[in-house]
Length: 309
Image (cartoon, rainbow, N blue to C red):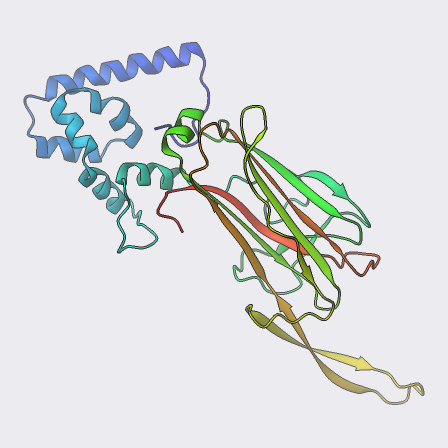
């Protein structure tokens, strides 16, 4: 199993690492007959996981059996506070679950518009173009404060994820076939119709699609109010002036703003996946100048254990 955020190393660095691990292996071999297995297991639990797999497991048959036991990885997970999403459902393989969980992270750069459009390739930039701005309405996660906004011409942006550079080499992906979970949050304005679309492709080394998730485009009508989604209501005070400008009246305007989450999990996608191409965006269907189109934020692509649903 590759170490988290493992980077390619030079020949000299690789040789040095081999010498270090060989020396460690010799030391371990000298201990195997003198130390009870219960003590050995406790020592293994206090060593880095990747060293246990790469080195300690090779010392002897007894140590290999210790490392290969589900109990070893279950205990390691317990000590490090790693738990399945559903505690009542044990993972099929605790070792695989441990490494995938430790390495799990969002592979998309700048998913919350915190650095404006940095990290994204602009595929379509219609109307008044993409823009990053503060969220108009509260997001479920209070740390998400910004979003990307589309305009009256089609706006699409994209990221290409190189799995090898992210620490997931071809053998790892082919043999383990970990689940690939994508998530994207999008929201319309209540006063303007708009369209949302997304496409996520798993690509081979030549960047040819192996598997694609591309649901139908989502359309929102002007003055939309979706009863099946969670709706947040914000009351604003609007001051209206009559023609004579001598009196004013205050009205309460109830604005319904909906947040939607698009999710998908790739499973059993087959061998050869080396890249992931994530594309999303949309357009304002009223053709209004400015930024009245779909809003997107908090997008994610994660390599996760098979137990994730």
